[in-house]
Image (cartoon, rainbow, N blue to C red; front, side, top):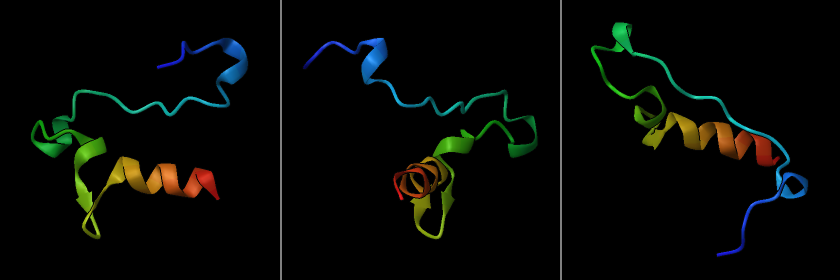
Length: 47
């Protein structure tokens, strides 16, 4: 694996929190249309 440098980073996806309204379920991994929410974000940003 190659080291990550500042020049190789295009963006950062912030995904976190306590998920109090989700009964502690990880929001990024919650399924929406059979895919984790974070995957929807990654696909959209790649377009």
